[in-house]
Length: 168
Image 1: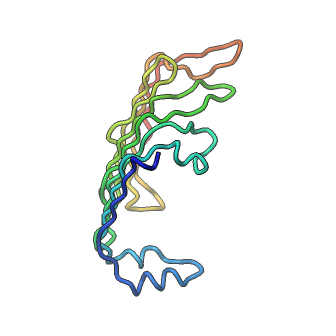
Image 2 (image 1 turned 90 degrees about the vertical axis):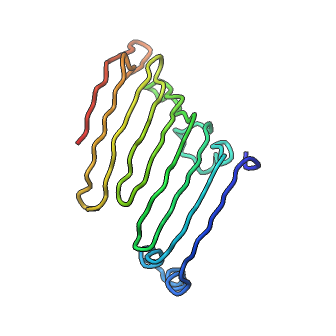
C-alpha cells in the first residue's frame, strides 16, 4: 500500500509564473515551468492503492517508480519503471500478465528501454522510442516480437501467431 511508498520532491520554481498559472482559466504550464529546476522521486507505489484511478481493463496489481526532472528551458529527463502489471481478459483476448516496462525520458525523446509481458505461454517483447520535438509530426519507432502469441480467444477458437511488428 501507501505505507511503503515514498515521494521526494525538490528544486526551485519562480512564483510569479506559478501564480499566473493558478489564476488562469486555461493555465499555461509551459510558462510556469520554463525556468524550473525540479526533481521528483517516487518509489514503492502499488497499483492496488489507486484502484479508483485505474482504468477498468487494468488489474490492481503491480508497482510503479519514477525519477523525473525538469531543468530550465523545459529540458525534461528521468526514468519510469512499472513492474508486474496485468490487463484483464476481454471477450476475445487472454489475460496479459507480468507487464514490465522501463522508460527513459531525455528532452523530447521517450525511450522504451525494455518492455515485456506474458500473453498465455508467450513472452512478448517491445522496444522503441517516440520523439515529440515536432509535436504535430512526432518521430517514432516501435518493435514488438513474440513467438506463438495468442491473438484471439473465443470458446471455439484460439489463434496463435509469431509476431514481428515494426512501426515507423
